[in-house]
Length: 292
Image (cartoon, rainbow, N blue to C red; front, side, top):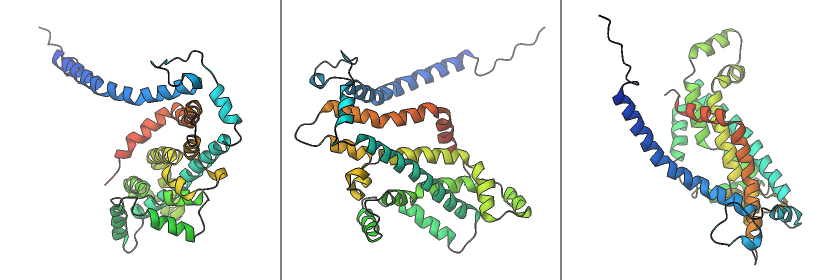
């Protein structure tokens, strides 16, 4: 008599029904959430290619008739709206600021994870405690410090407060802490110094966390409106989010130009995600896989 074939839990009818119900429940939950996120984005794209006279037409025509580039031509032709300059400013602020955040956070995280110095645990506990302090409380002191350092109306007023964020330090400290001490001991035997161990041994091993921090930092700096609006006042120094606010001021707001500006501000984020989709998912996934 032949032995009965072994049935895996995944292939059993009961398991299949449970898997189907679970999948159906997730679709019912996340599909409406996806529509909530996607519909405003589609509305922005539609309105940016719609004539100004048709902006308030109801019902909404999701495919403009006819589609037009007039809003983009007007926004780039207006001498009072240096959109190309604002776009370049945002790119500089986000790119350089991300590099500063990565360098400062990785050095600090390495120090708290791998070095021994007096008061290390106390200092790290105070840093974690600062996460519970609302940003509005430190707003005026930060502004006054930057004023006394004569950093207002410069991008240093954006980069260095962002680099002082505790989130990146905590994230990378946890990942540095998970690296086996034997690797560091072997490198030290070979004559490597502290910085070389940090740069050549430990830093490549936390690549996933670095990628996740890069994503969060770049998008945060690119989309930030509140703090640059406070520390920047020269029109040539403004970033794109502030420029969109300026674009919507005045006695008559042209919705088509406003939507076109928002579309231009969104395109780099879309391209960034399209090219680095797998790396983004992998980086975000590894953020929770750190040592204690």
